[in-house]
Amino acid sequence: MHGVLLLDKPLGLSSNNALQKAKWLLQAEKAGHTGTLDPLATGVLPLCFGAATKFSQLQLDADKTYEAVARLGVKTSTGDAEGDVIQSRPVNVTVDDVAAIQARFSGAILQTPPMYSALKKDGRALYEYARAGIEVERAARAVTIYELNMALSHVNTEYFAIKIVVKCSKGTYIRTLAEDIGEALGCGAHLTALRRIETGGFHALQCVSLEALEAMTLRQRLACLHLVDDLLRQHTVVTLQSDNAGRFLSGMRRRGTWADQPQVAVYAEAPQALLGTGHIRAEELIPGRLLSPIEIKQIAEQFALDGAEAFQGAEPASKKTIEINEKVNHE
Figure (spheres, rainbow, N blue to C red):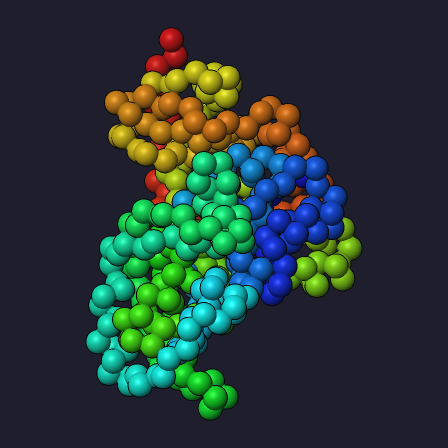
């Protein structure tokens, strides 16, 4: 089985547990997720099955959009609601105060990764040190905040909070962003809610829940899969005729009159089939991640068996696509 499942990860479940449950429901053999969401986070979690796992790194590197709520006046040991309260301060914050600091957290910024994270130091995850009460020095990292909207609000009239919508680069820690915003406002903060609403062009409205999957038949679950091609929608498309398609699939470079392209999705012309990815440099098509002939055959059979209506996203490489006519030498 090959494809991408857009899962709406539920609250309280780890990304790996969600993956294993979806893998069981789909009776899949090979699966992987595209970057973890904390157990307290919900939202878009693309899960890759079969050949799609070869391109999962693209989602790891993708920009992401989150909705979050940060409670003001309380700091915790983990930066979110799971941790112990380590400091409480009065909150004297106005709407103007929030507006005044917004520019400080927009654009290119530096973040110090939290101790409760999966980043590794000397082969051990930082959260392992944190659980042992050991503080490890971490270097600040550059991340980019492309869009940031913040609104001051009351939560059940009990406390002040900041509602945040942020589009950011990979590697951005929203817990750290919430904490840093709290410090800039002089009262501290911790994250109480987090939802990923978009990643790499996949949106929450396209997702299916585990609860909904459990209520489906296997055929209905398979119908929720998006094509492997949907991971490559930002790629330029190159289509090769059969002889050059075979050579490319065996790892050989192909020559043509192509302009340089950093990311290319390569297809066979007849029958049309995704072969893999590559890049073009100096009029040379250079293979990257390739599907195997068995995977190509299985994808074709899977699609033929379930019918076009059984799959979402059947149009390959729709966004930022340039169709390039094949003009290659046949040496």
